[in-house]
Image (cartoon, rainbow, N blue to C red; front, side, top):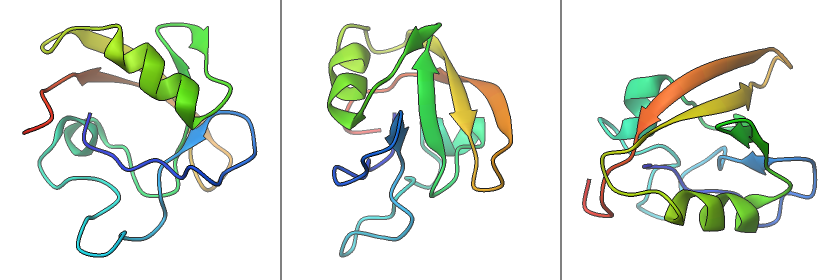
Length: 94
């Protein structure tokens, strides 16, 4: 999907890192998440209507899809607004 999730986040959902992890940006420029408008600090609350409890569950759920599948994500942004975006999944190389 092209994001780094914050494995220390303890709220509901899975939060995209707010800052780079070393050389790796929180949202890969030009990647599927970037193209869908996902930004650092956004929290992924659901995938195709399935509530996401934490980052580990997000990883498991996304791995159940195939490269090229399009999923609908419910997102809460830093302003506590919510929106739904579609992301077409890519392999780990893109």
